Image 1 (cartoon, one colour):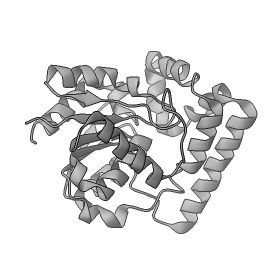
Image 2 (tube, one colour):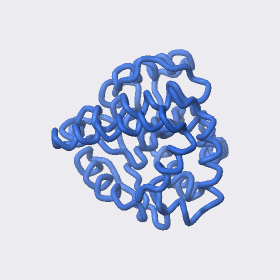
Image 3 (cartoon, helix red, strand yellow):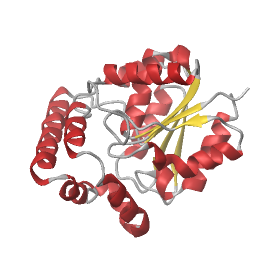
Image 4 (cartoon, helix red, strand yellow):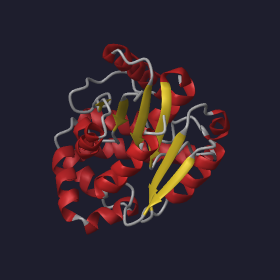
Length: 248
C-alpha cells in the first residue's frame, strides 16, 4: 500500500513549487497534495503559531480524507512538518525534512533571531516585498541559487505576488526564534525520517546529519545543490524521495 504524500513549501513559496517533484510522484504511483501554507497563495491567513498550523494541517488531512500520510517539508515547511510529526505521529507514516532546523538551542540566540525576523517584518511593511526579496535571496544561504539565474529569476517573480502584509506576519510569528527547540524531542520521533541538505548550503549539512542521528533516521547531503535542493536538483531530489517512500 502506498500512503499519500503531503508536500509543504518554504517561506514565501506556494504549493506549485513542488510541480516537478509531484510529476515524479505521479509517475511512481503516489497520490499527493501540495497545499499553500497559511497566508501564502490561495490559503487565507489564520493565527500564526506552530500549534495553530498543526491544527490547520490536521484539518487539511481531514478534508482530504487521509488518515495517515508521508510528510515532506522544505525549510519553514520542514519545521512545520517536524512539529506535526512529533505531535501527531499516528497521522504520519514517514517524513522527509529538507533544509529544516529542529530549533535554536540557546535562549539568547533564539531571542536574537526573533528580533532579527521582526526587523525583517518591519522592512516588508516599510519597503514592500520586492525590495525585501532582493535582500532575502542575497543571504549566503541562497548563494548557490545565483549560479542558476533562471531558477532565481522565477522564484523572485513568483514570490513577489505574495501578500506583503501576510508575509510580514509570517516572517515574525513563524521565526525560528519563536519556534520551540525540538532537538531534545528528536529521540522520541516515532516515524521513519530522511533529512536532506545541499552540499553547497553553508549551514544545513551538519544539522541534517545530527538530526538524523538523534531521530534514528537517515541523512542525505546532495551534491551540487544549496538550500533549496528540490528546486536546484529536482530529478535527484525526486529520485531520493521516491526511493525512500517506497520502503513503506
